[in-house]
Amino acid sequence: MDQVELITRCRQGDELAWEALVREYQGRVCSIAFGYVGDQDEALDLAQEIFVRVWQRLGQMDEPERFAGWLTSIARNACLDHLRRRRARPPRQDIPAEELAGLAAAAPDPEQAWLATSRQRLVHRAMQGLSEINREIIVLKDIQGLPLEQIAGMLDLPLGTVKSRSSRARVELARAVVDLEGGPGSGGMGQEAVS
Image (cartoon, rainbow, N blue to C red; front, side, top):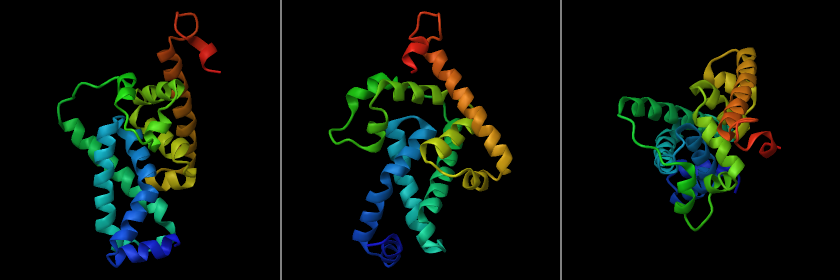
């Protein structure tokens, strides 16, 4: 069944079609949420909230063939709303990524696969130290693979600004990774582990 037919059936209340649609896109939604919040449990809760929003707004979507972009936009907005609400609450103590590895579920999911290697965990930790806009651009461009034109539209920024911010975000991420590794000559893993 193609995507347009699947969405049409979801709009008609077909629960099996909705389940198939959620299964098809849950990895993408969880990955987006995880990129914004950096906590697996929080990302899974946020993914549920995102799918509730999708269900509520499915009838408002004009172009079913552009569902993936529409879904990404809803996910991004939900993540930003969540981060605004989180700032209003007192911070809780974060659990280091190394301790989360032992809590993984038996069945692999996209987040667990993404965090499977130590290099990826290092990049994830480095992303949490990025500025909000740079982390968002990395999530949308490098993790979700969205074209710069679409990101510019989502962020309501000129394309040239998004291009330059994308370059700066990658430089900031690279510096954060080197800093977390201990940097060359500081007794950490240094550049040898980067290659």
